[in-house]
Length: 416
Image 1 (cartoon, rainbow, N blue to C red):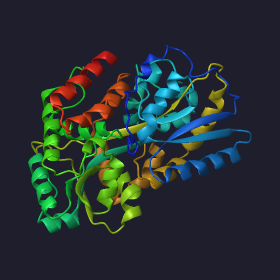
Image 2 (image 1 turned 90 degrees about the vertical axis):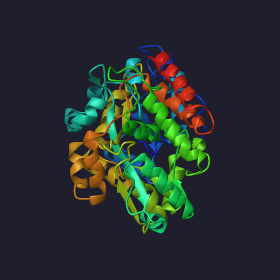
Image 3 (image 1 turned 60 degrees about the vertical axis):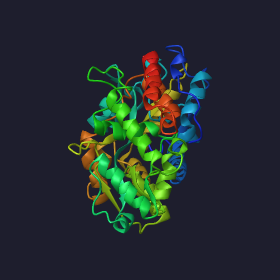
């Protein structure tokens, strides 16, 4: 969400995750928990994230005498490398806020969801997200936040460029980007840096009949539709219709430029307004539209879900403290507060009602039920996503798109 959004949010990630190298069934450390102290690693979505967790943890500790939560905040651009180190050194936190979980479940590193939250909390998760949080039919991931991606466009720049409405086709995207460029701004903001290039690419590929897997579930990363998609994005770059160096640009940079009125179009989520636009320019005149497709006949939406994963300790003493903390966080008022501060969509029924009356959020909520998600239940996804973040952007910097996707396909097939 990531920001999955952020979250996928970024200095130069130089290695794929490759966390599957841990021995199956091994615990994440030597079990040093005192039973009441846990470590929580949280992703930084924006400037609101740390103050939220600081306040929540203070409240939790005041209401649960003796229990302590050590908080570590990690930027999404650093998160993959951090997680790899946690696993390889067997220093995983007790609770991790991340965008993957299935490889941890496969390797026996994390608790089942039913072991670390109460039945009432477990039953409050929206079924769509529960399915995305399963490995081999069992729920391991704890849905944390969700998001849907749509096209943001600057109405002021569009008016200045003589554009009447948001583009529906790829051809219209290119034409509109050319007009915006002539009007003095960047036509399209293309973030293919290591923060979240997998989300940006999939948002385009799914609207060209492409994706990560074929109908049978086998990896199909180098399929013709994906090559065609990457070639289109490379064409935008070569025509200088994007910002310079998309291969090293992360979404937070694009969003900041969009908020400053320097970018005509960019793909964003519900968090874009609260996290990026409002802090810079609450008066920005922007619109939100379905993602353009190559044909213009259908418009698919990317769905994103981040999770919380609870890691086992060899003595199992951390389970009670984890359960207390997670049940506390998933109380309606606490999750709703996080969603309202960060601008994400709910993963629980109880937190969903608060967003139904907000017209801005409603367009994302309406898109979510039919959204397409990355194959996060496949344990190989972490390695694939890492390879995408590392290599995909090189295609717009000069490499052959087919060769880039062939190499990522090999990584996927090698990983499982």
